[in-house]
Image (tube, rainbow, N blue to C red):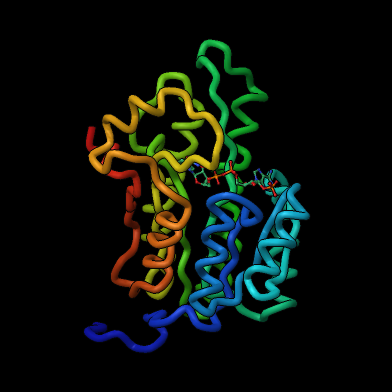
Length: 249
Ligand SMILES: NC(=O)c1ccc[n+]([C@@H]2O[C@H](COP(=O)([O-])OP(=O)(O)OC[C@H]3O[C@@H](n4cnc5c(N)ncnc54)[C@H](OP(=O)(O)O)[C@@H]3O)[C@@H](O)[C@H]2O)c1
């Protein structure tokens, strides 16, 4: 029986750790990448179509590497992890941040609408976890953080397909935490409302319902991600809502 934390069970510092962040060119992913770089991590920046923004984020991370992959394609996910193997020879952390969001009345959702969301939010998250899990189990340590959503915890009438995908991410997190331990943890951060200048429908009402009385920031999501990435392997399968208390409603 293990009663103390041997070094491989801990990630006491992110300094020098190789951490892949998906969808890291902009918005929340960018905030996470910048924060991890400030913590001393060697951040691998994934992007899909935002090449210019990815390069800018990489520069701001002190010259990080960028990796392009269409996450809808498992072959491109596999190629990205193989490229990371060649570049770094190890992988200490994975942040599954990339996702899609659409609002459609469930009565109007088509097969293409469903696949558009699930192919990235759930399927790609699983296959990135599988690729990272294989490497981390072989190393004996690793930290995976899946970004889910308040929409995976609470039902939203016009986002049933999105809510289902994010609820899937939450269950995937718990099931993989059981599968990948010991040494490798899988946790999830569930953001509330994190706007980046865009108009959010019903924002005033949501703010009134939020105990914190405001929306959140990418830096606050990055704080929670950093916590899970640097926590011991005794914290796994957990979902941290970073939503100002909105999910308590
Ligand atoms: N913002 C919020 O209010 C909020 C609320 C709840 C949960 N969340 C969750 O927090 C995370 C970040 O939120 P966000 O608003 O910053 O996300 P976002 O801007 O909607 O998406 C993040 C990135 O995902 C990447 N992506 C999407 N489809 C892809 C594909 N097929 N292949 C490769 N990359 C793909 C895009 O990269 P490229 O631009 O490079 O293509 C995009 O920049 C997401 O998981 C989101 O669901 C956000």
